Image (cartoon, rainbow, N blue to C red; front, side, top):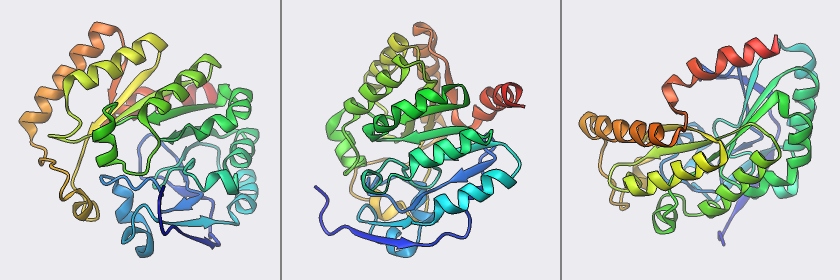
Length: 275
């Protein structure tokens, strides 16, 4: 249970922002700040100071974002929308505000492609609408580790990783395109190859592909990472681990893509089927 949570309702200027990620055209962030409190999250540097300085306990709700989205979805050029890039769209406040089902409906109905990333099984609340538009969207769940002790250290308020795997499995069973984000992989914490192997085995058994990446130091994350026992990345460590991951994925027949190469894998396919 998170104590002393602060929730602020604010007005947004735009619903769709230009994405800085190569594989996305737009970003849709219904919230600023995130109650999962993940210590490694680059979004700390991109959130209002009230949220970044009290990470995991402060969130801003963009209360007018659906009204804005209804207009922008009719007038903006169609493209790929990432939901979300600097927050988790299914953090616990979504249970109250229920922004996501309306947003998915609006974007899908107007011809946008929707790609959702979350750490929360709460996404299953929207499984009917996801199934309805499954040809026009995909869903990824982040699973940094299945070691609950490590997860509690890195992601103190995020849902249990096994529950995330179960949610991913249920989505896949409903023929919704899914993927698992394995990352960020932090040296000395969640880089245990046996742990990673179990995640790959799960993906192999359920026909789920993997996107993975290593942790990078960001200014905002450093105060939160201190005390976790993590070690700074180095090229030799990552090269060895990267080769090991590729070997395991090859053994189990799982498609594994480095995050930096995701645009090569996905963008052409999406544009080819959409436009």
